[in-house]
Image (cartoon, rainbow, N blue to C red; front, side, top):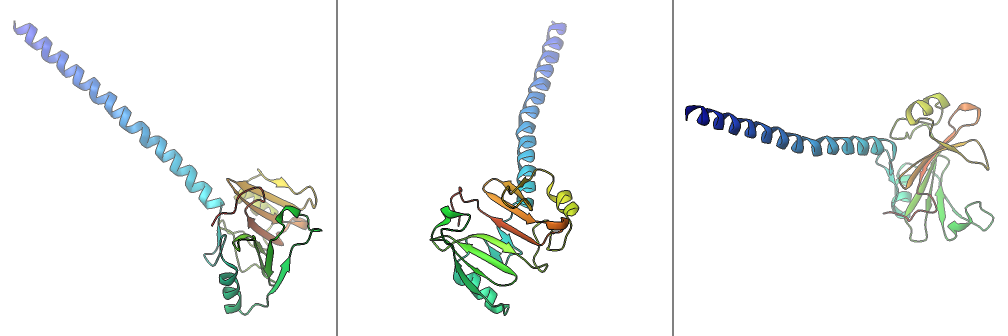
Length: 187
């Protein structure tokens, strides 16, 4: 009888031990998946930016953009896209530009693109006008596409945003962030 009780206790202990291990594996699995997802989102967020140093941002109204440029003392002019422009499907879009920055707005007056021509403003990863091609590739990688029309633009597309670098003579002279024209505008 004593042997039966000892065996029953050992069996019960073994079952509890197995159950705890299985529960432990089940609870740690989602955490690992969540961590991997979070890391991917963090890495993507580092590359895909919707703003420039928290001052200019996609979805910004023309009034906000102009107000900031005015505060910086920049001369601004308005430009309307014409049928002769390369992005013909952007009919009704317009832009405001200075010598340092240009912002493109859709017909709903939401900013959908920035062109940066000054070393004063950097990408999220720290690329500025004047940086070399090697630094861009080091920070953004080699998964780019070239603009077949000009060949000097290097574009990196993430989700529904693109960042591009114009690099003649292997030096950034202009960079931009934008929502590709086949994507809906996002506020």
